[in-house]
Amino acid sequence: MGMNKAVIGREYQVREYEVNPKDFTFYALATNDYDNPYYWEESRPGGIMAPPMFAVVYGGICVPDVIFDKELGMNVMMMVHGEQDIKFHKPVKFGMKLKSRAKVVDIIDKGSGELCQFVISTKDEKNELVTEATYGFFVRGGGSGKKDDKKEPEPVPGKSIFEVKKKIMSHQTYIYAFASGDHNFIHVNPEMAK
Image 1 (cartoon, rainbow, N blue to C red):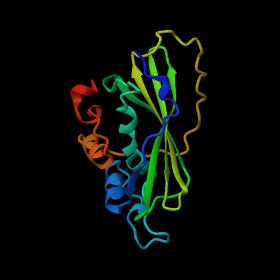
Image 2: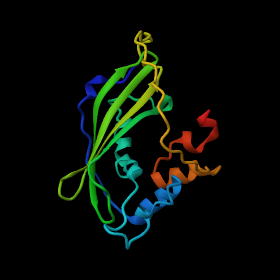
Image 3: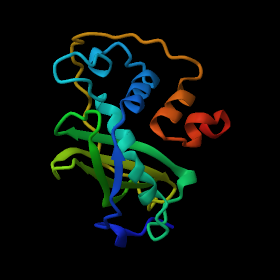
Protein backbone atom coordinates (compact mmCIF):
# COMPACT_ATOMS: atom_id res chain seq x y z
CA MET A 1 0.00 0.00 0.00
CA GLY A 2 1.40 3.38 -0.99
CA MET A 3 1.42 6.71 0.74
CA ASN A 4 -1.72 8.83 0.91
CA LYS A 5 -1.61 11.46 -1.86
CA ALA A 6 -4.39 13.39 -0.12
CA VAL A 7 -1.65 14.71 2.19
CA ILE A 8 0.01 16.64 -0.67
CA GLY A 9 -0.17 20.33 0.25
CA ARG A 10 -0.35 19.68 3.99
CA GLU A 11 1.61 22.13 6.16
CA TYR A 12 2.75 21.17 9.62
CA GLN A 13 3.24 23.18 12.77
CA VAL A 14 5.97 25.80 13.05
CA ARG A 15 9.06 24.62 14.95
CA GLU A 16 11.35 27.13 16.66
CA TYR A 17 15.10 26.99 17.09
CA GLU A 18 17.44 29.50 18.73
CA VAL A 19 20.91 29.38 17.21
CA ASN A 20 23.65 28.57 19.70
CA PRO A 21 27.30 28.69 18.60
CA LYS A 22 28.08 25.57 20.65
CA ASP A 23 25.60 23.64 18.52
CA PHE A 24 26.96 24.74 15.17
CA THR A 25 30.57 24.45 16.33
CA PHE A 26 29.88 20.86 17.36
CA TYR A 27 28.17 20.27 14.01
CA ALA A 28 31.26 21.61 12.18
CA LEU A 29 33.42 19.16 14.15
CA ALA A 30 31.02 16.28 13.46
CA THR A 31 31.20 16.93 9.71
CA ASN A 32 34.99 17.46 9.66
CA ASP A 33 34.48 21.10 8.71
CA TYR A 34 36.63 22.28 11.60
CA ASP A 35 39.23 24.29 9.69
CA ASN A 36 36.95 27.13 8.55
CA PRO A 37 37.55 30.33 10.60
CA TYR A 38 34.01 31.54 9.87
CA TYR A 39 32.74 29.04 12.47
CA TRP A 40 35.29 29.86 15.20
CA GLU A 41 36.83 33.33 15.12
CA GLU A 42 34.53 35.76 16.90
CA SER A 43 36.85 38.67 16.04
CA ARG A 44 36.44 38.27 12.26
CA PRO A 45 34.28 40.92 10.54
CA GLY A 46 30.64 39.86 10.71
CA GLY A 47 31.27 37.48 13.61
CA ILE A 48 30.98 33.73 13.52
CA MET A 49 28.33 32.00 11.45
CA ALA A 50 26.92 28.51 11.17
CA PRO A 51 28.11 26.05 8.52
CA PRO A 52 25.61 26.09 5.64
CA MET A 53 24.66 22.44 6.16
CA PHE A 54 23.66 23.28 9.74
CA ALA A 55 20.30 23.85 8.02
CA VAL A 56 19.67 20.13 8.54
CA VAL A 57 19.66 20.77 12.29
CA TYR A 58 17.29 23.73 12.62
CA GLY A 59 15.13 22.59 9.70
CA GLY A 60 15.48 18.92 10.50
CA ILE A 61 13.38 19.30 13.63
CA CYS A 62 10.40 19.36 11.24
CA VAL A 63 11.20 16.02 9.56
CA PRO A 64 9.44 13.82 12.17
CA ASP A 65 6.22 15.81 11.64
CA VAL A 66 6.12 14.51 8.07
CA ILE A 67 7.55 11.01 8.27
CA PHE A 68 5.46 10.03 11.32
CA ASP A 69 2.22 11.57 10.02
CA LYS A 70 -0.19 8.62 10.32
CA GLU A 71 -2.39 9.93 7.51
CA LEU A 72 0.61 10.05 5.15
CA GLY A 73 1.32 6.39 5.92
CA MET A 74 5.08 6.35 5.32
CA ASN A 75 6.71 3.02 6.21
CA VAL A 76 9.84 4.38 7.88
CA MET A 77 11.40 0.91 8.11
CA MET A 78 11.51 0.85 4.29
CA MET A 79 12.45 4.52 3.91
CA VAL A 80 15.77 6.04 2.90
CA HIS A 81 16.67 9.71 2.67
CA GLY A 82 17.23 9.89 -1.06
CA GLU A 83 17.49 13.55 -2.05
CA GLN A 84 18.09 16.95 -0.55
CA ASP A 85 18.40 20.39 -2.07
CA ILE A 86 18.85 23.55 -0.01
CA LYS A 87 18.54 27.16 -1.16
CA PHE A 88 20.39 29.54 1.14
CA HIS A 89 18.99 33.07 1.38
CA LYS A 90 21.06 34.48 4.25
CA PRO A 91 23.74 33.33 6.70
CA VAL A 92 22.78 31.91 10.07
CA LYS A 93 24.41 33.57 13.06
CA PHE A 94 24.49 33.20 16.83
CA GLY A 95 21.33 34.30 18.61
CA MET A 96 18.99 34.12 15.62
CA LYS A 97 15.54 32.81 16.45
CA LEU A 98 14.42 30.67 13.55
CA LYS A 99 11.00 29.30 12.67
CA SER A 100 10.72 26.32 10.34
CA ARG A 101 7.69 24.65 8.80
CA ALA A 102 7.36 21.57 6.60
CA LYS A 103 4.98 21.14 3.67
CA VAL A 104 4.41 17.98 1.60
CA VAL A 105 4.70 18.97 -2.06
CA ASP A 106 4.53 15.64 -3.93
CA ILE A 107 4.40 11.85 -3.75
CA ILE A 108 5.92 10.31 -6.88
CA ASP A 109 5.56 6.69 -8.03
CA LYS A 110 9.03 5.44 -8.96
CA GLY A 111 7.95 1.89 -9.82
CA SER A 112 10.01 0.16 -7.14
CA GLY A 113 8.76 2.57 -4.50
CA GLU A 114 7.49 6.07 -3.84
CA LEU A 115 9.31 9.33 -3.31
CA CYS A 116 7.77 11.73 -0.78
CA GLN A 117 8.97 15.28 -1.41
CA PHE A 118 8.52 18.00 1.16
CA VAL A 119 9.90 21.49 1.64
CA ILE A 120 11.04 22.94 4.95
CA SER A 121 11.02 26.74 4.86
CA THR A 122 12.90 28.57 7.59
CA LYS A 123 12.43 32.24 8.45
CA ASP A 124 14.11 34.57 10.95
CA GLU A 125 12.66 37.00 13.54
CA LYS A 126 11.90 39.51 10.75
CA ASN A 127 9.95 36.82 8.87
CA GLU A 128 12.64 36.85 6.16
CA LEU A 129 13.47 33.60 4.39
CA VAL A 130 16.70 31.99 5.58
CA THR A 131 16.60 28.59 3.85
CA GLU A 132 14.30 26.46 1.73
CA ALA A 133 15.18 22.78 1.95
CA THR A 134 13.58 20.20 -0.32
CA TYR A 135 13.78 16.68 1.06
CA GLY A 136 13.12 13.47 -0.85
CA PHE A 137 12.39 10.35 1.19
CA PHE A 138 12.14 7.15 -0.85
CA VAL A 139 10.02 4.29 0.47
CA ARG A 140 10.99 0.96 -1.08
CA GLY A 141 8.18 -1.33 -2.21
CA GLY A 142 5.34 1.19 -2.16
CA GLY A 143 5.24 1.92 -5.90
CA SER A 144 3.18 0.48 -8.75
CA GLY A 145 5.91 -1.95 -9.81
CA LYS A 146 5.96 -0.43 -13.31
CA LYS A 147 9.36 0.26 -14.77
CA ASP A 148 10.16 3.75 -15.94
CA ASP A 149 11.11 3.55 -19.63
CA LYS A 150 12.83 6.93 -19.56
CA LYS A 151 16.59 6.69 -19.78
CA GLU A 152 18.66 9.05 -17.71
CA PRO A 153 21.08 11.11 -19.81
CA GLU A 154 24.68 10.02 -19.60
CA PRO A 155 26.63 12.32 -17.30
CA VAL A 156 29.10 14.59 -19.02
CA PRO A 157 32.47 14.24 -17.33
CA GLY A 158 33.79 17.52 -16.06
CA LYS A 159 37.23 18.70 -15.17
CA SER A 160 38.06 18.66 -11.48
CA ILE A 161 38.71 22.15 -10.15
CA PHE A 162 40.10 21.10 -6.78
CA GLU A 163 40.21 18.13 -4.44
CA VAL A 164 39.87 17.92 -0.67
CA LYS A 165 40.72 14.84 1.36
CA LYS A 166 39.37 14.32 4.85
CA LYS A 167 39.94 11.48 7.26
CA ILE A 168 36.73 9.95 8.57
CA MET A 169 36.86 8.46 12.05
CA SER A 170 35.39 4.99 12.58
CA HIS A 171 32.80 6.47 14.96
CA GLN A 172 32.04 9.56 12.83
CA THR A 173 28.40 8.58 12.24
CA TYR A 174 27.76 8.47 16.00
CA ILE A 175 29.20 11.96 16.47
CA TYR A 176 27.15 13.21 13.52
CA ALA A 177 23.96 11.65 14.92
CA PHE A 178 24.45 13.51 18.19
CA ALA A 179 25.42 16.86 16.61
CA SER A 180 22.71 16.83 13.94
CA GLY A 181 19.89 15.31 15.98
CA ASP A 182 19.51 12.64 13.26
CA HIS A 183 19.44 9.41 15.25
CA ASN A 184 18.24 7.26 12.35
CA PHE A 185 19.32 3.68 13.06
CA ILE A 186 20.93 3.46 9.64
CA HIS A 187 23.61 5.87 10.94
CA VAL A 188 24.28 4.25 14.31
CA ASN A 189 23.35 0.56 14.00
CA PRO A 190 25.55 -1.52 11.66
CA GLU A 191 22.92 -4.28 11.42
CA MET A 192 20.20 -1.83 10.42
CA ALA A 193 22.51 -0.25 7.84
CA LYS A 194 22.80 -3.60 6.04
